[in-house]
Image 1: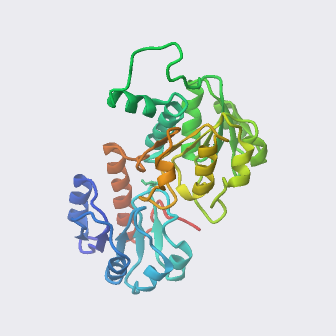
Image 2 (image 1 turned 90 degrees about the vertical axis):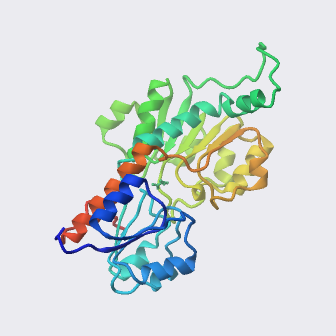
Image 3 (image 1 turned 120 degrees about the horizontal axis):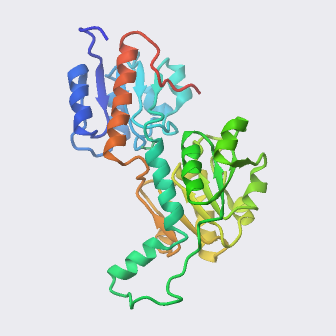
Length: 326
Ligand code: DGY
């Protein structure tokens, strides 16, 4: 990056202090000190006057928002790996590059998935609530029994970085790994993970005990798990989702959980964040987390480092390392 080129950069949310400090050294920076998500009008106002825009998953960067961007906007350096909240076609039409932060939140997100895989069948949240409510009457042979995780069949939808990191962890807990992915993994990776590929998603769903969603949200994966596919799962199957809420039809999932046609769910993401339906909130057989997958100090600083690296490489006139291609 040339000494003189300090690109005008607007960040939509509060970032870790060290990241903001480093950005302030390098860029002509405008921060959102209040940390309240920007309104659509504020997003439009921001994209109309910066060269580099740094949004997060909590900002909807629609075609309408981007229509307000002048030709000065060159780069959207997203703070996060998922870019489903950005209209990539609209960005491309305006020659705006988009980058993300792959790799640096894989392990944290996989840990969160594994935590839910353990928490839901073993009823951790229910037990914790019982203790805090003063309702625990001591150990009992039939008290709050859950299902054993060891030896069960785990179905993973999406075998990218996070899916594979989940598979590694799950193997260590004695789970049998099954997966469905757009592309089959190389033989050697399948062998390392002892993973069985299912070309047909429905076949996999009919033959697993726990399902975890780890694919990106795109127009093809919207409501991938709908009423029909939920009906393929048995009444003792658990669903985990730490990817994107829109991949599951949340109303259909709530119906299935209420009727007991599936056993339970561990959710870190929702269709209309931060809104969660009353019916879902009322259920006992769910663990509900507030989109915490990448929420570690280390992960968020590393995400900031990737954002900075992308902006610097772009400002130096090169292709940024994490450019997202449609
Ligand atoms: C991402 O990076 O896409 C997460 O969902 C937010 O950290």
